[in-house]
Amino acid sequence: MYLLKNVLKVIILVFFFQSCSNESNQNNDFIVGKWKAIKRYKSDVEIDFGVCDPYMLYEFNQDNSSRLFNESKKQPPNTFCGETMLGWNTWKNIGNGNYELHDKSEQIVSTFYIDNSNLIQQYVNSDEKVVYKRVSK
Image 1 (cartoon, rainbow, N blue to C red):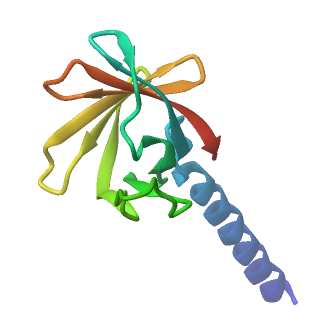
Image 2: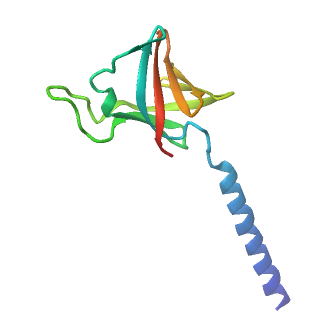
Image 3: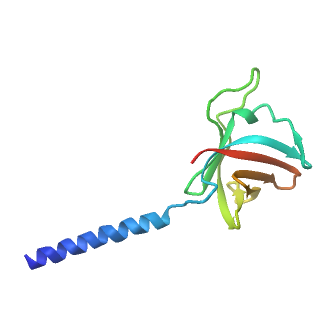
């Protein structure tokens, strides 16, 4: 009986420590979730959206993958917005609320930063920015 109690204690401790380690490995970065573009700027002047912008969502996943996609599969007449525009990219938290978006060859495509509750995308080698609001976590 003594051996059985000790084995049971060990099993309980293993499950306890395993559940703690799973919680600490979960990525709770601010960027994780789905985001919808709400404004676009060029040289700090608000400009009109591209024809596909209103139909697209950015999704940042806990495994550091991301994609820009047409969630509703809707599009304006005579235009093909596609189901996934940029395919799968990876994002990296570089600290202080700043993020980098990398393509499959590990090149930086754009950077993101937090402004209040919005996410701002700044394209590399461009004066264009996009403001996103969170639509789901």
